[in-house]
Image (tube, rainbow, N blue to C red):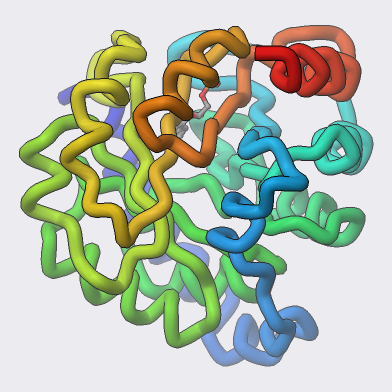
Length: 263
Ligand SMILES: O=P(O)(O)OC[C@@H](O)[C@@H](O)c1c[nH]c2ccccc12
């Protein structure tokens, strides 16, 4: 069993537990459930912002602790102030050290789209995402059937959430693409064995239909790579570790955003 299988197995238990503790109707009565969401697509296509989807990630199964010293409000507000197009907040606790509270806090201090970064396998988690103040949800093609992707994406859209589907190869892309998606992300990291290769994005760039906003995810650490990714049509760049591994992620993104202007 690889790490992704383990995460999904644990996630199924976690979701069943959560359903008993917090019934769906309670989520639906949360204050933020009725709020109008920010458009992920609009923010990514807005030339005034820099295309970075800046991630708050305390730790990961591949790297262990990345940063457990910083506050989510401080870091995410600095990300937004540096021109990021959206925020990504890990809500998985057991493998990434995140929490619902991180998302709620990021939401409370920011006016740009917030992605709930988690392993979505059940509609219930979309109700959670909406109740916690998310604007966008992630569907990982590697862990869902095409039918599940389509129905989860449809449910998300009915809640007013935007949908980012993540793929790692052509087969996943071709079998899972459906009209309910807003954006398609190519993960340069193989979630099964953690190997990373930016080339994955270049290989799949042309295969993603133009109706979807193209995003490159993981292992991005220099502005020159972003310039090259832009030249093949990518509009969004999901970056976590490169900022989080520093003592001051806000300072790291400010410098990165300045460098990005000159490439
Ligand atoms: O920290 P990085 O290498 O910049 O990567 C960020 C993001 O792409 C990565 O955290 C990620 C991409 N897809 C995921 C799915 C689940 C958990 C995490 C992820």
